[in-house]
Length: 493
Image (cartoon, rainbow, N blue to C red; front, side):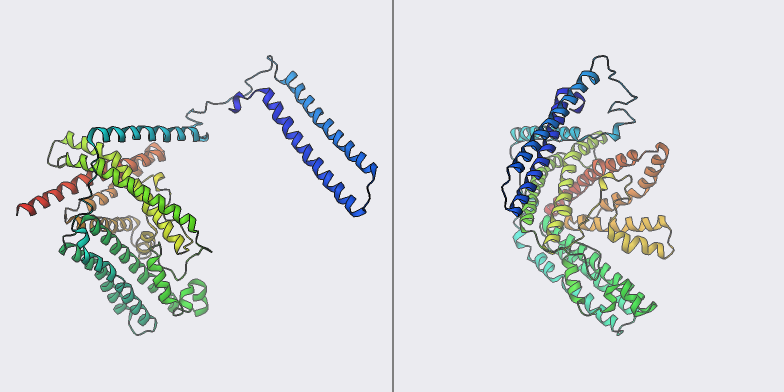
């Protein structure tokens, strides 16, 4: 450590650096003399004597520096010299704690976390054995989910229909109201069609979740596609063509790569449409392989936690609203830690690994798929670019108050969270919808506490408490028991 460094080590380091500098200068002098001798093609003994004298002088300078450092030891490091020369605080003082580097403590926390969880995993396996059973995720019906697979393959028909509508709109064949009506039909159909297929077919849970996620992504992309093109048409009609090209390059010549832009947008890792995107120069194949390996490892770890920890806890629980309150709280808190691990693994696998793999394969340049939401001071901060671009700011431009715009954004988010969970489970109790909408009053409470205590850590703690420790485990218990009740009624009936 720097504070315990001895004076002798300090002298040695100084002498070493000085000697290194002297040797480098000597090497440069020798190189220069060699070049000079090669140009004159003479071997002068006087030149060799000068070079040897330079080496001796450099050595004497190094010895001189060493002697000076020894004199520093003689006078500066005496016992009578003061060791405390200023007013300083301890590294862990309240005023200085955030000014220090805590990399060592962070590494210690990681080591302790890995050790504790490894022990718990080994203890769980010894006590309960292997509990992994993929029946909930993949059943005998999974291979027969061909209606869901065919529905997924037919989803590209909706973007193609949207392209035809935009092409007719650019050629002024369709009025504005008709364009809006057709886009509404197309986007609504892209969402209702998969929902109807999932509800009609008794498919596996994972198959239904996958199809719902894909259909929601298609819906969000189609809304962005229609909204962006509508805005470009409005710009083209309000200003001259030259100005339009400087503002929106897609309006200048919309038919050269228009369909290619749509195709690229539908497979690109983004929900916001634009005519062109930042692109990288090449694909790093080795890097892609590394990310695929990480994706497989973390996906397997996530499945292990679900089957080995979450499923037994949930099966041994009661409905949170029908049993003992203290028992329900104990189950929620016990479920919170493995549920948090699963949620973090899911975020890392999808938003980091998978989106970066897709971006690398498509040479998609803008890879800011997420921001530091873990530092969020309120639950309203982790907002997606799509929500800001196509809901929040359009509401503000239409004179809608900021509070109402935030409420609308939460409402849209709540609807899609409910669809992605309730439709595959076939349980419509609105638990996910209520959980998202309850964040609206939580925003007001968080801001009040933040202003009262004048600290951003209060808001961040509240964010983690309600977002991961209480909210998600409660929703897991609610949907599980409702799903089991629905299956029990179906089998008994």
